[in-house]
Length: 184
Image (cartoon, rainbow, N blue to C red):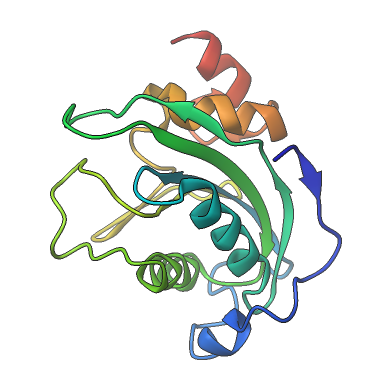
């Protein structure tokens, strides 16, 4: 899959209805939609199908448009070496969902594709992993949600796909994505 731009919401996937109960408006000082960066990963089953389905689901979220997605890149696992390689990608969303609402929606997409966070081991294999990396210029450190993602600047498997679609995206407190990748 290559880089693409989407100009509207995807339809017909059924995800918009599934997320109708997700908080739908930004609850921060942002009267307009914001751009959010998401990391995608999968190393179980049909990895490309899981990533494709996740991109369609994100594009179907209420008050959200999928702006861009990177190509899928194969990477070696981090942490637990006893697992297969990952396919990783990055996506940019334009959304009016609040940060916690967006995170809840991303975790719902993971669950819909077989992820069970309660039963998996940390940094172990998974069908689908969706991480909220950046949410506009927000810096947030609350239980269950840290923005920007606290380890994204250390991870080539996050930065390589992200630089393909947003090299000048600034990670608050860290700098542009391209500079972060060059520093690894």
